Length: 138
Image 1: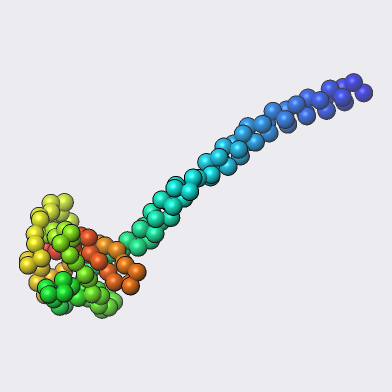
Image 2: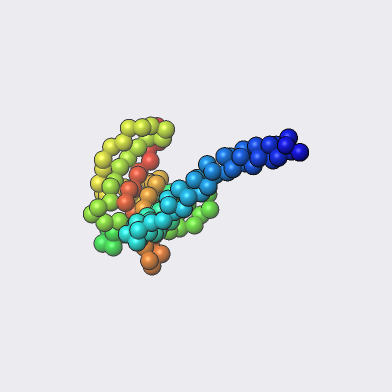
């Protein structure tokens, strides 16, 4: 009878000791999940910005310097998209598989050039380029 009680006591003690770290971890996870309203707002803004980041690549079919737009046709699907740019857009050129880039200006991108556009979509669904990379063949 005494052996059974000691075994039960020992088993209970081991079970309790093993469960204490688990409860401590759950508590810390709850604390980590709590955010201040400012942190929550910043998190939402970051998620929205990340969700709106976009990439479009293809061949320039038309350019309109007055409206600051390029129409770029994807090579794989043939779908065309109007890319908007402004004074903050960075223009670069780069050879295929090269890490060297050169700063260029908008006048150096012509119809028929292959480009990669990185940017964001606005609330109207328009693509605004932050980086426009003219691809050069070797």
